[in-house]
Image 1 (cartoon, helix red, strand yellow):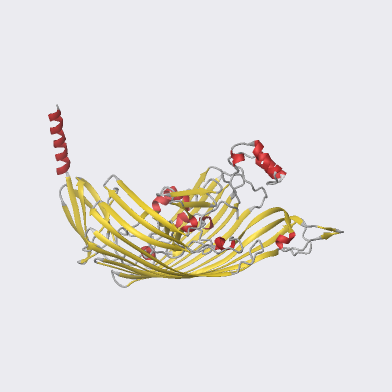
Image 2 (cartoon, one colour):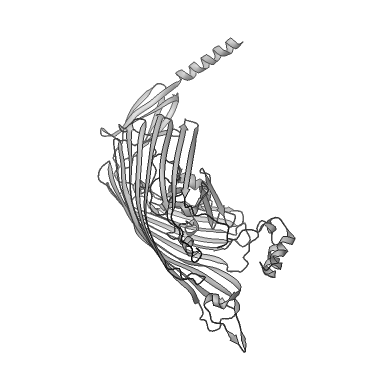
Length: 628
């Protein structure tokens, strides 16, 4: 019996062995090899890039019908059907595109298939299938090491995210290579651009320091967003979605397609609203996106204009453990110890334990609008060399409104009112904390890819000018103070310049070497007084050198491995400086040494990957647990 089983097993293995074939070929254009072309077997996990000779090879494929999709920037994409019943070798010729497409806009900041970093690409189709109006962090939450949270509890409105446990203030985010992070706080609030997901072509999430990018330091990850690329045919769509907590999303999208063989216009209009899971955590979000492009054989000129408005009821405070655990005696102690007023204590006791919201004032809202203007220019000198440059301007303005009880007039630089012989020292009031800011600059990259060489030289220059001020819009007792009394005013001006060079060299058919060097200069000046009336004037200058090195190994057509080292440096953000205790040493910049190793395996029906990392921080600015 054992011999029979053994013979049957040998026969089965021999059938498997003789039923597997190789599919290889060369991708060229009029006899010129196209190194780095993308070759994908559709409906499988199998895909690779051509080597320096334009060659590719898939091994151990079963007999059957396969569809290959071959693409290279600047050339017409081609799909080929192959009937594999023997070893097949293909000679694939790509025709130069009649127009130069805009996929190159993000080339300088993206990790490529042989870049030795941990990254995940998410297609626009996949994003569209998941897009029910929730914020972008929720649409990315299934990527490795990604955790998204929502203030309102429904993913609509203010969301926060972490990658590898690193908070969003340390995650670099760009749109078409242009920085999206707030230059002072380093944070990214996608609520300012609601339903941006409906205008995305694809997203790349790099984990760790990653490759050099524009804008904030990538201390935990980089998120690179690309908006819609050219669509050659006219189209129009209306999409609607509805969900729990009276959540609704309505989106209208339309485009002209390519007319006169050179021009295209695309537009989107969106509205998202939700009551939220948490009490009084409503969101009212509106946005539009317009893109107009000129395309010729070697040049792209593209203008993007987008704007987002958000008004969200504040749900920023957590739920006290005594409310969460239905500890009635503990909740009563909040009032007994003057942590809450009696009305606030009563509100907490009578609320539901998992939806309690501290704020009850009817207009306790965050109200903000942000407008983005981008002008992109791309030019292809030949098949191997292209230039990308962009100008950008962002204008943001808005406030969050707060109701305050029993506030001291002196804390708001307001004179004490005198009624008869009595001096009134405190009052209930409503204040608005305003932020009015301008962010502008330019980015560029020169990209060369031929044979064994893949070189990018790029950088950017950006300036941020932000005004922080507070106004009293109502008070029970005003006294001699003016309506809209201004109690604090300060400015933050930040200039950021960076220059980087990335080089990937294919040493052998299976081995690639990678180097990435970045220099970054920052000048940050703060003036004026803060909301606690302290003088916060200060100036800080930084010069950072961020080197990155790695090796990429391809032992087989369906296997990849890499090793890398990267160093990142990050300047403190505004709150690190203005919240520092007076008389203490100011915070210093953080440094990170990031060591990465990874392995990926792909077959027709299965893919798997493992990534090991060690991130060693120096002078890391961490939360102390104290209330600032």
